[in-house]
Image 1 (cartoon, rainbow, N blue to C red):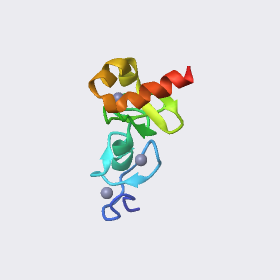
Image 2 (tube, rainbow, N blue to C red):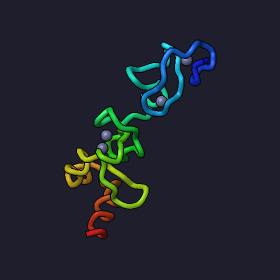
Image 3 (cartoon, helix red, strand yellow):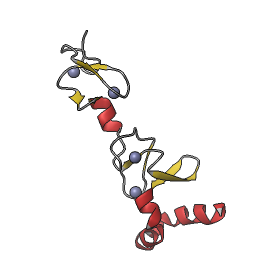
Image 4 (tube, rainbow, N blue to C red):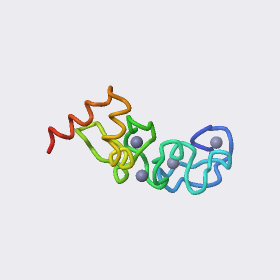
Length: 102
Ligand SMILES: [Zn+2]
Ligand SMILES: [Zn+2]
Ligand SMILES: [Zn+2]
Ligand SMILES: [Zn+2]
């Protein structure tokens, strides 16, 4: 069985998340290098579904708030949204999305 990431080295373990077989080099703890890359930067345990447009971190469903379909911000940024928007006026559309919703 070859590593499904590099297809060169012998697979030694199976990724606990996607189930790919990976070699030692592409194994990161219990997950493969690909899942590691896609991991939520906030909790580090769930796969990300999006990237926070404010801080640029990868975020999973649990660690983010959906402002509108397809637009999610992380909970940290969400709690500081007003502060962030006052610093970056170009992000004012995000607060508009919020106020429209409520
Ligand atoms: Zn490999
Ligand atoms: Zn994986
Ligand atoms: Zn998360
Ligand atoms: Zn954020």
